[in-house]
Image 1 (cartoon, rainbow, N blue to C red):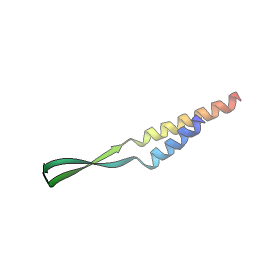
Image 2 (image 1 turned 90 degrees about the vertical axis):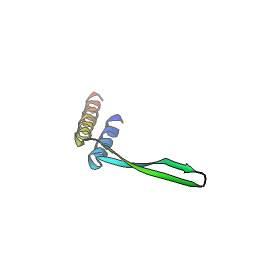
Image 3 (image 1 turned 120 degrees about the horizontal axis):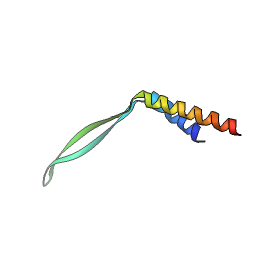
Image 4 (image 1 turned 135 degrees about the vertical axis):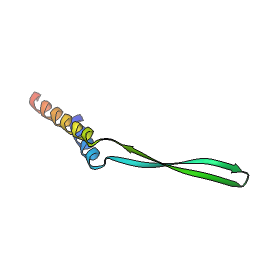
Length: 68
């Protein structure tokens, strides 16, 4: 089961090499007037990490089949 999960996560990490998210920060708050700032953040990982997860998943699946 762990090997299959690693394979799926590895494929997803190769297909999508990152994601974006937005945070809102209050800059000014003067009574009824409020000014907010949106900050865009990017989270990235190298595709090699996905490849390593795929290789690890295959190794776990193969080793569990041999021991059965």
